[in-house]
Length: 132
Image 1 (tube, rainbow, N blue to C red):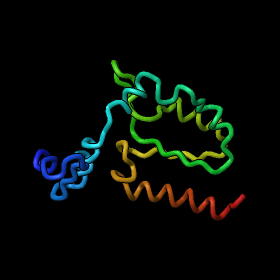
Image 2: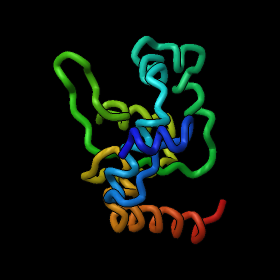
Image 3: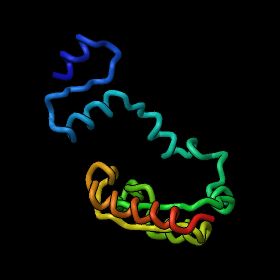
Image 4: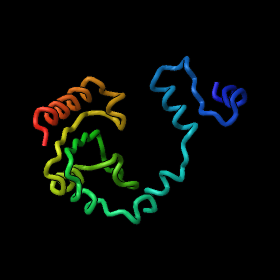
């Protein structure tokens, strides 16, 4: 199906509408993915000129952070965006931040929509009931 799509629509993202949503999204994403994006994070190019801690200290607006599942691979290190130490550091730098942990894979909004909306709505309600 992928090869047929590529033959019929060369250069276009592979979108196979007949597949289940998760599989369709995975194939479409992989057909558009640039491996150098990952390599830039592994070799440090992605953020080499950006100081995250200094940037976070300057944030004054409300901040909401959701953390999904993560683990440490013995050869590759952190698999996930942030471990618990990263979360603690972020919360120390941005005391106005609110945080929630959701048992989910990387795409929380897709994998756990009710849980995602529950936390997001609570955060938004807090902002609108306590404007600064």
